[in-house]
Image 1 (cartoon, rainbow, N blue to C red):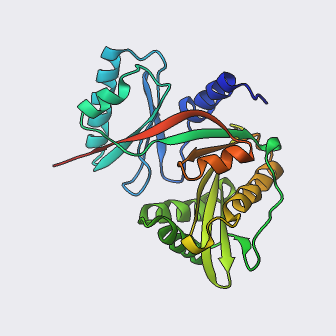
Image 2: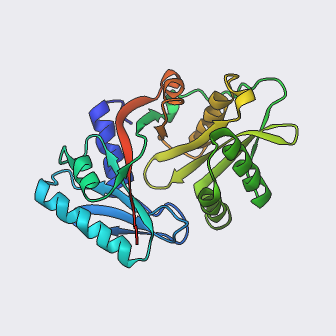
Image 3: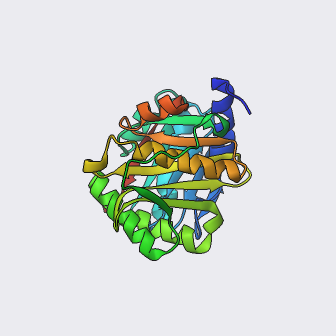
Length: 265
């Protein structure tokens, strides 16, 4: 286990990006000399997860054009190039925009050794946590997410249901409940053979924010990651969650920006 910033970033790039595994049933990873990409159905996440660290300007433009061609021939209306701040060439983002990609909000890549994180769950009165076990629970996750973030959860609903039914050992879903009402939801994706598990979600509905539910969800999942032998937890954090996670022991390694290509015809 390492705490060194550069060594940890290098490990993440190698294990989670260059050696990426399919993130769910029915998807596959394709590798070329200069990129690693994931492809699946329209309801899956499709995109580029890694590009060669020695990518130069000429090869970058060729790689971008090749990805547009590949995803177009697959009949997909959109795909994402997941760009990290340390990726090369330094102007790769500009080259993606010139090719028709649109940059969305950047997030901070945070990583923490599981052993350094709190695992004691402390909840406000009236709130309880429970794991997601069936399709009805997934609907509760969707309700909490849509209320917390104001965004549609239909694509994630498909992905979570597929994980829960076809690869349950690679997924942990958790709900924060007040009575029969979900007030927060989160999930953890497990990547066997990497030492990493990823934290996702964690949105809390407005009346229950600032009461420690988000921290409790992190501790709950950290305890499970510990039990299952994972070494690191990884988060792509928004600016709302980043300060909380850093106070809990996460370290910022880089930033990541989704560059999305959408076909217009």
